[in-house]
Image (cartoon, rainbow, N blue to C red; front, side, top):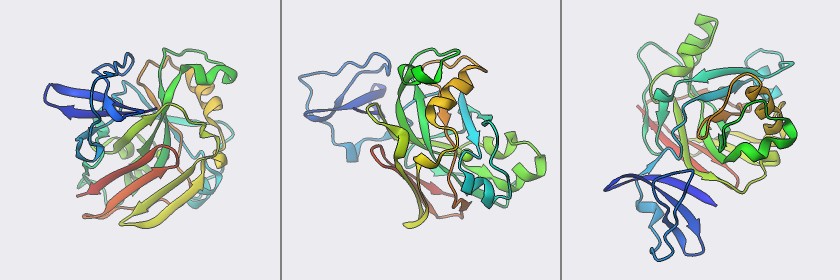
Length: 251
Ligand code: MG
């Protein structure tokens, strides 16, 4: 099932795929109410929002060997995790704002795990039980500030630096999905999630050994090789097989 969040007259609402197409599904992500009598919605005309509003955005650095290499880093012996603030969230089709403080703002297309149940000390074998599904994310990064600061908070945290969407796919095996990032229609990243150094099961165990994850929290699983800068006027798309395409403009 694909779950969308969109702006409706009565505030934000959810929609989900059914035999009839995409239908209204109430206002609670964790207690969806599909109205069997409701007619399908026209997805093209929905004003989509991030499909989830996480309290915590945990991200993983250097989780593909070829990406670690392209920035001159070794593949890490264990996951490097960091946090992005929820204030950085950006809806599908909305605009990434390049801050004046940075001369180089990069895209990073990533598979994103959406947590469905409160999770603490989850073993890798049980990881799927606490996961609602998966979405696409763009871990937008001010690369110059990341390098200058020697840690990543500023470079990863500007408003608009965390586009998520377009939907949450709940029935998906993330082990080997094609992840593609395009800028103005040109392919920049094209890699299988099979090349992640630490897979989703490992990451759920690793992160929940550190912190409790709550429903709606997300784990951004890292980006493959091919990252690069965004310029004003660009359109950046992150597409993951089985989920869809997250598209944003750049100002
Ligand atoms: Mg990243």
